[in-house]
Image (cartoon, rainbow, N blue to C red; front, side):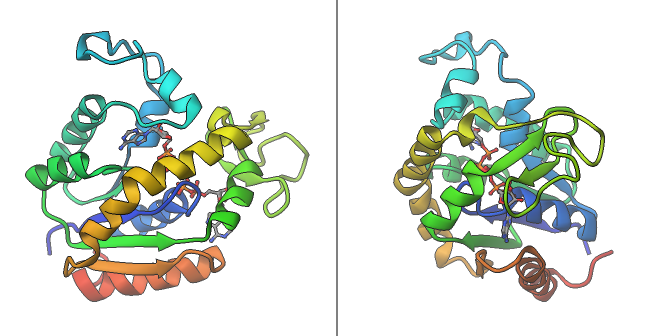
Length: 219
Ligand code: AP5
């Protein structure tokens, strides 16, 4: 079989990054994530795209969407070189969904569903390693030594957009812009709603079963 084309949708903190890592490993596909791509290029010059700010940084730190032209170009380039993929963080509005339809087809559309209260707890308590990007949580997933990454010894920091005001804004931006995208895909044959509020291993078991049913066994 050719490599699967998987889309993972869900609000900020739903576990898209966590579960995309599992999918990429199990199915041998590329993890295409607009959030990571933009974080690595926060200060790139986008002034020639007629945007309000000259770099992605200001949009991201406030929890607002980076302009479509910037993100569409990142995804188009990433998908053109990927055989199979799990796409995480895109599309985030109906215009991006329309762009995506012109770029590729989809075998599975996963929607992780989690309550707002749980999302706020997950995001405001998250800490990330500023060296390797590993995720921790101040209550649910603590490192062995406070403030130090178990994987690489790097410093654990709070993402600028995980501060409480930015989190509330990100969730509002999701409700306004991205929830309609989830509704847009809900009637798609490939759509699967997943209870993202379960423990991570149970979420993964549901996702793995859904992907296997639609695209067959991993290579
Ligand atoms: P992005 O990086 O995509 O952020 P996000 O969608 O807000 O997602 P997160 O990375 O915060 O959460 P996640 O769902 O991946 O959850 P995770 O697995 O980390 O985007 C950042 C910014 O970039 C945007 O705000 C925007 O500015 C810009 N951007 C990106 N794409 C764009 C686009 N298409 N258009 C315009 N702008 C764009 O898990 C979260 C936490 O919960 C972790 O601590 C994890 O350990 C924990 N956790 C995960 N699963 C569980 C579980 N089942 N139970 C308990 N804890 C769990």
